[in-house]
Length: 158
Image (cartoon, rainbow, N blue to C red; front, side):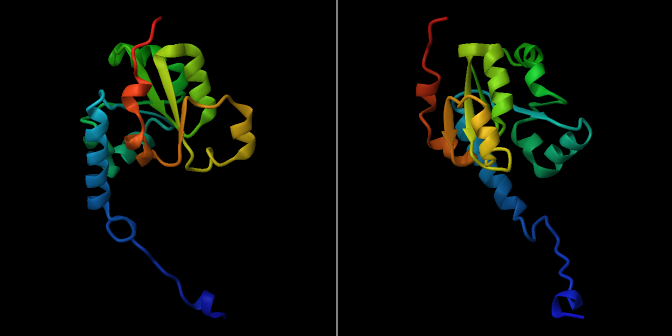
């Protein structure tokens, strides 16, 4: 047996590898700065059982005061999103250019797309080349707070 086979590291995630209290405090701070410009809503896709649980356990649900919408294909549910959260303009932040492109095609100039280049979807060169660029690309989600949000949301003529 090698040393690598003789030792197994068992690691807890919450509050051991991830300082949840600090992450949630940072997240709340970021969401409060975004809320200064408009309501913050989590619009996610995926399993309708697993995703809500993940959102609740992570503190995201509470951080956005329960404004969470989860669909199997969120880009196909924009009528529902607009009905629940009516607004003049929308900003969608997503690491999937395919989703951003589909949403932009539906909502046109009412939607500003933001592409954080983090995660495996965002880092796949073939995927990035296959879809139109987002209105704004950022390196990580926290960079959105340093973006010119008022400039992105400047009144537009429709």
